[in-house]
Length: 387
Image (cartoon, rainbow, N blue to C red; front, top):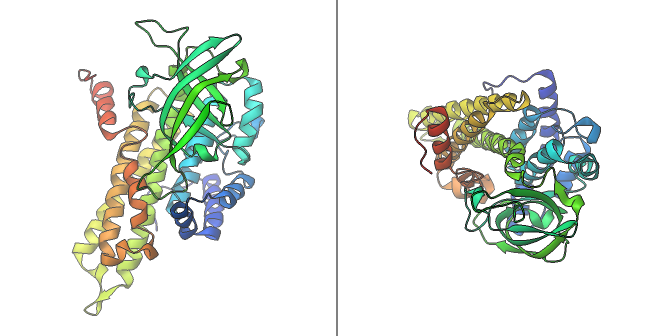
């Protein structure tokens, strides 16, 4: 289906490579693994071998040397084939980007090549039960213990940590915090470290990437686990948060494409009273409007990726706008695709209804639509702060 995005030759080659691998598996593979609690190791390994997990990471550490623009192409195309892959956003994108920006040379050598080829995965541990969007209010603490740290606390809604070799953990640094200032530090914590345990959160989301509560009971880590400079974690973590928002935009752009393509095909071929249902404006106009909104969101996502790669000061605004626009557009497109299919929209055979909750999640995570509106109101419109 033609759209407003016109790929460069390099991006077209990346998109074609992703599509070729995705077609070998198909959306039912992804959904079946999500239903049964299975993983997508075969697909993940093929993407890694093709160099499609680390396209944005530095070449000297095993990546493709590209940027967010290339990562958007990969993530969107996977989603456009019915595979909204949260672990891609988490492991090579969020964690890989933070390590590439702030990790030591030794840490980069230890982790980035493995994240890029898919042989290792990393979860991201920021969210907590009582902190929500207020990262300044983290209760998970790290306190000095010799030349290392002891970490205690709890993380919530941590995606795919059951698949991960380590978690990139953000904690309040007790030794550097004061009553007026809560300093944060970032640590790479192997998931087999004594004192770290996980518990599955039952959700309605059908995805191979499950959600977990993470418990940290006197977890001891050495000095090699610290990312960058102690106490500077709040600034450092934004090296991963803007890519996260941009790539959620990419996931939603892909889901929107997938939904509209399936609905349009159904509307062209489904006949009622001898004519295709797509001939009726009550069917065609909502799909056309959904297509317009999805394409506009794709442009916003591509723009935010370019700003990220240029290290532009406007990337925060652009990333939030892209995430907001894409999540709204994708959910509306998916809803309209289900409606176009009538009763078949709820059939597992058509692969639409099971994408609902993972798409709905994107209105809430990684930042809620309300917090995006707060950000835009305050930073773009210079309105008074609400918090």
